[in-house]
Image 1: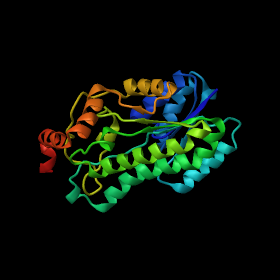
Image 2: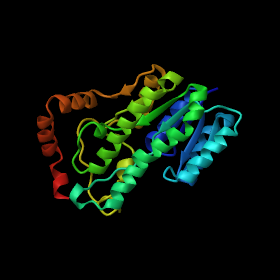
Image 3: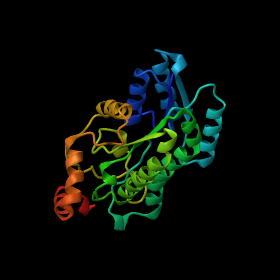
Image 4: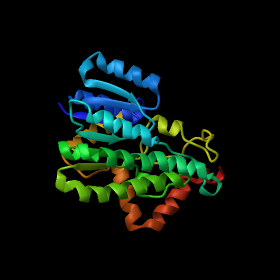
Length: 264
């Protein structure tokens, strides 16, 4: 039986990924900051098979907690086969108005935490010849108004793991980068405003809203096929192509579509 560890597993895409992994026969280690909801999620899955569900409360920005998690995993009778870096946070605020602690928070959750988890757990993944799935964003490839910090973090995430993939492929470790567009998940509901408080205005978006369940299924299909990158819908693929071929046109279209962000 293979084991997967999923961050941000209690809600949104993380919960959909947890259910999908469980349905595929994985032993699932659910981690999240929300201890109460995490326990409820674990109990839900345990009704089917209690031996394949483990939950651990985890703040991904806490380096000591990550070290403790790695030591705990080393003491277990099973190997870690897959790490899913899903936990994330975003903001909706113009760059010039955003306070630095907001940028730091977004970078810490969306870039530093996945990097630390991956590097700390890499020895175990090399031993099992396992893999890493990172939930990036189209914002990692293309600029999105009102998301300067988020775009920066997701761009850094992609670049780091593109490099790491090349470095660890010789050990049989596979890395999948996932680049979704707009998902119907709590990440936008919980978006930070310029001052770190909840964002007051509704989000702008382009393309079709995806469901986390549909994306979760596509993610595991792509991973099992050893794909390196997943653009889960035609809009995401087209937008990434447009940004590369005609960046000025892309930016003009984005400014029109996200014009309301400029008023915030």
